[in-house]
Amino acid sequence: MIRIDTLIADQQVLFRDGLKLQFRNFPELFLDVVDELSESDALIESMERLKPTLLILDLNLLKEDGIEILPRILKSSPATKTIVLTSYSNHKYVKEAMKSGADAYLLKSHSIEDLKQAIFDVMDEKTYLGSGLHITPPNNYDANSERTSKFEDRFMIRRRLTKREQEILKLITQAKNNKEIASELFISDQTVGVHRKNIMRKLGVRNTVNLIKFTFENQLV
Image (cartoon, rainbow, N blue to C red; front, side, top):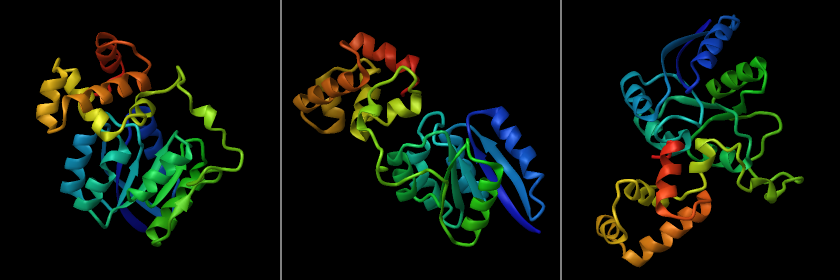
C-alpha cells in the first residue's frame, strides 16, 4: 500500500469530510490527510510547511482563488502533485488551471472511481482530464452562454476581472479616488478611469456606491 500525504483545500466542510470517508475505500492507497483548509493564505502557509505529496484543490477558495495561487504554492512545493476537484467545467478554467501547474482536473460530479484513477495517474507522472472536459472550446460551445447570470458565484465573478482590475477594485473599496489610485499603482488617472468603467460594466453596476456594495456582498476583495 502506498502512503500519500494529502492536503485538501475546499470551502465546504461537509465535502471535505465526505472525501475523507471515501478515502477509506481505496484499498490500494493510504491517503493520509495532513491538513484541510478553506482559504488561500492558509493554503500557502500549509504547503510551505508540510510539502504534501498530493494536493486536492477546489478553485473557489476564500481570498484568492485556486488558479491565482497555483503557481506560488507549487513553487514552494514543486514535487506536490495537484488535482483540481471542482464544480467548474468551462474550458477556460480547465486550460488556466493546467497551464498554472495542475496535474489533473475533474469535477465533483465525476465518480469516486474517476478520482482514484486521477490519483494513480498523477502519481505515475501522467496528467488526467475528467470525461467531458476540454482545454479548448468544444464543438458545441456557445459563447452566449457566458453572459452574466444571477447564478454566478464569487469565483466566476472574480474571473471576469483582470488582475489589474482586481487591484483597482480593492483600492476603490478603500474610498480612494482615481488620482490616489493612479499614484499608488504608477499609472495615469485617465487609465484608472478607464479601468473603473470597465469594472462597473463587467459587474453590471452603474455607480461607485453600488460597486462597493456589490463587491462586499460578493466578497470580491
